[in-house]
Image (cartoon, rainbow, N blue to C red; front, top):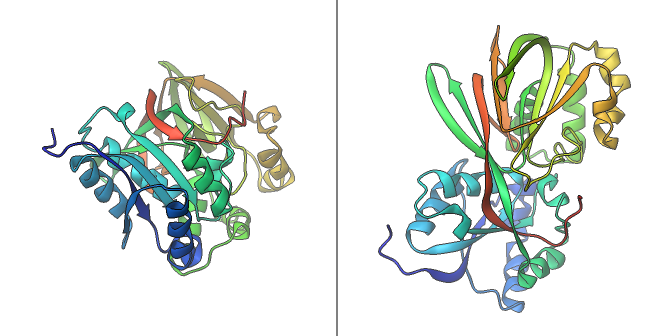
Length: 317
């Protein structure tokens, strides 16, 4: 246990590269807004991938219990992992808020968090909170087993390939919602269906898999609804399995990913569960909250009512 007393200030973690450099460019404006709302804070900028995990872990050790993520969904994911990496304190004693600077704002979309900074800061000042489930995925990098926590969605297969391409372009400074959609279309050329066994709460089925999405939230990829009925506080994971589909069939049905009716397609199965295991004939690669991880075999679970989040409104039942 930390020797520090609990701090009342917010610990703000800023990704300066988020939104193609908006994190750095707009920080003065954001910090002025926080000060105007009498939100006391200490801030740090990240300099590399994964650094927000370290900053969050260190801040908890020093007594901080309230965190603001200034960046995209990937930065928020790192903050979540910093909370759980050592479990220094019960996670439900910690509160997370977000000021979206990335292009997607997929997680915040469910909770009415505005992309306009004034609105996002006002949400934090109002201080309305709820307990939010957290997912966890155990996977492999080569022969080494790893664990990652996620707040929104984990994707396997095609989704991971699109994220890989998108992140590579983000690292080069290209950042827009159109990039993700373009990478969906370009990835269809090379992607191959993978045979996999899926064990859902102990019940096994086998299928040729295009993609699997496991959702705590409903949105990903800048507004796609891969798990359209997921709830962040029901203690369950929503699973969408897209089975073998031809390229033309996928392109013809892309609208289903955006209008929330993906589960109506005959080659798509939906499940709700607490535990999911995936074993595949060839490797299925994995992403969580837009961050590329490793590959199968993988096991995904849920931690109910895990952490407090600040929200504007519940834009779901």
